[in-house]
Length: 329
Ligand SMILES: [Cu+2]
Image (cartoon, rainbow, N blue to C red; front, side, top):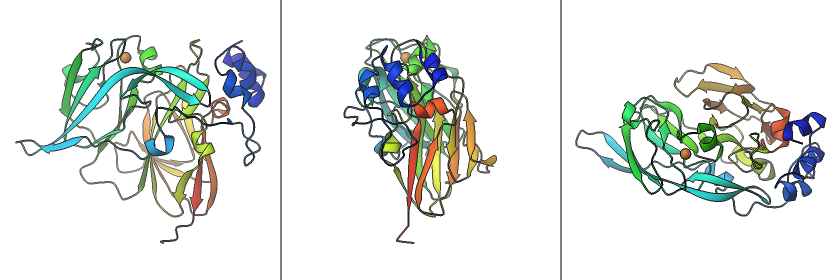
């Protein structure tokens, strides 16, 4: 029985438990119960102790590179990315044999300003050929799409950061869907020369994991760890502008989405404009689509956010913003 058959019969704790009989989700499913605070939700019990990232830390961590000034006057930002194989924990007791950039899924969030020169020293310490394919505008030879870097080899990607917006990077070795599904992707933010308004900034990569290698995902998440932000809600200050850099890196499923409860957000598609394209509470996204969302919570409380595909949120893509009064305001 595959995941879809189960989902058709009914999801939630029972669905996940049934699925586990034929996969390594067994341990997690045994502990899938409704947590006491949100009785209507599924979730996991137990702690993830060997995740490749701490979801709350990853959320707000930006790698600006090693910065220096070129003779031309331009800013040079140098980054180091190594690809290597690593088993990561994606839900309590559920391990996935990932291919990683720098040992983490998603890879580090790289950040530059439009016009900077970006130099990425890539070393393939993994067991398969890999590349880094950056989205953005750059010369063909820096595209990371034709020549794979063999295990043990290195390559230096160098290009000007443009256009401003929310870009991404991922491995482009074949078969592509395998190299992405295994975990080789990350966010690449190019800030406009005139900065966006001050805000609290977060990065979420919507992803999933095919734990039994049947070409479908068994676990879904924002930032890899199933239900991470449900178990530990994201603290938000009442009245403070929130800016979410949101990437869909999900493989196998054709579409993903985000829905904020009890709120609306402004959408800056691909982050390529400073004028919002939409004002809504639900956004559909295909693979590699990424958008900047801006929103504010006016009242304290717990506010859910999740995919609006119910099967995704029952399998891990579910979180909570915990809004508290800003005592400094
Ligand atoms: Cu690869």
